[in-house]
Image (cartoon, rainbow, N blue to C red):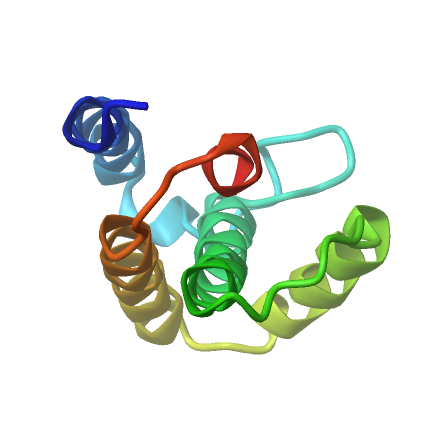
Length: 121
């Protein structure tokens, strides 16, 4: 796989996502208006942050050769992170969003071989 190309594509998509978040007025960041289930822009941002952090961890294990393939309980993780994010200050969510992405890209860049398992993350 073309790592540089994959990272460039991620960069383009990330910029699109941050533009969408940038269009949300600060007073509406906590408004539960994104989904029928009551997710706010803050919830979505934290969801992305948490998955980026998880991807960073898994990619690090893949790079170190210590990863054991398993299917995470995505529903349980999503519910856990939803509740966790709700308890955080807006600025903390924004910081985790940015830092999670950086950590994920760094972990991805360190892979010697990007196989289908790594790319999935």
